[in-house]
Image: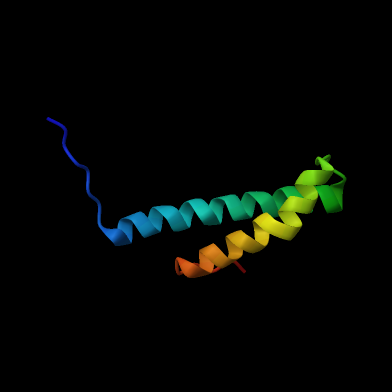
Length: 69
C-alpha cells in the first residue's frame, strides 16, 4: 500500500517561488559576470538568458507573489 504525501498549497507555492527566485538570481549573476568581468559564457546561453529565461522567470516569480527587483 502506498501513501500519498500532501502539503498545503501555500507550502508548495513557497517552495516553487524560492526555486524560481534562486535560479533567476543565478542567471542574472552569471550574465553580470559575463558582461562586467568577461567571464566566459556560451553565446547561445547569453542570448537565451537575456531574451528568454530571465524575462520568463521574472513573470513567474511575480505570478507566485515574489519580487525580483
